[in-house]
Amino acid sequence: MRKTGWVAVSSGIESAGVKELHQSDSGPVPRQHHDEAAVPGKQLIRVRAVKAGLRTAVALCLLTTLVHAVLVFLHVAPANPVSKRYSSQINGWVYPLFEQNWRLFAPDPDSFNRKILARTAHTDSDGSVRVTPWLDLAAVDNSAVDHNVFPSHTSQNLLRRAWTSYVETHGGSDTARSERAVMLQKYLRNIAADRVAAHNDGGTFDFIQLRVVTLPVAAPGTAAGNRPPAPTEDRLLPWWKVTSHGK
Image (cartoon, rainbow, N blue to C red; front, side, top):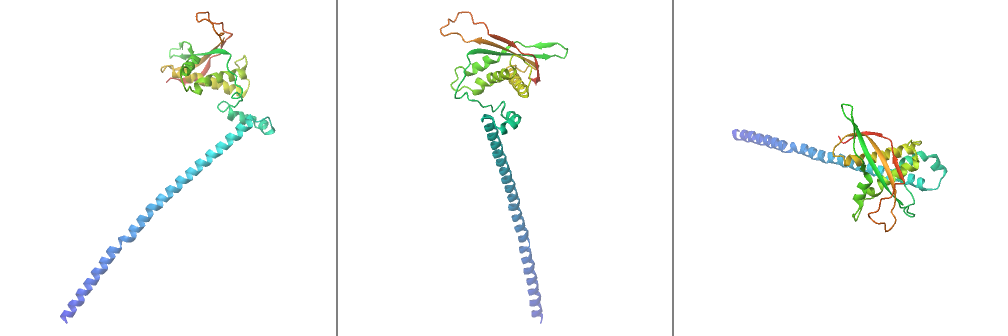
């Protein structure tokens, strides 16, 4: 009886120990599976968010490209009811960055030399006005093009085309009489201000003035020591207020 009781007690202890061991071994397993399942879930959400962002970006790029192609097509196409009705929107998108013309097939090179000079002014704290000497912006562009095997299209044409577009919309007057004239005036002013700021060595200015001197092209074989030709036009533009540069 004593032996049997001891065996029963010992077997009960062993079974209880095995049960506790089984519970202790099997208890953390469901939590580990839960943690392992949560990590892929978060990654899946992130992957879906990235894919959705990429799809949105691609859709916006395609939409912008389509709108750009349609507006440029309406700009270069013959006049039609659609282009006439939405002419302000078309011109606002195309000019001045996406201007289209046929000079690629019928080039119209300059038959004269043009100097586009700029000077700036700044009002000091004591009320005095400081005016800088003239800077030849065209000469800066020409120096960037000369002896350059692959000259920049911007250096060759940006300032020149800005001035010719300004003349086309303003004529001999410097008063803007249309929205496009106002836009091209700001365009020319900003180009000149940026060019001067790049060569101003940190000087601050609040006003800018342009002077355009047009010279005829010298005849072939002209001696180098001869007197330079007289300018055909010497046009002085008014002072323009600009955002402070050079700070």
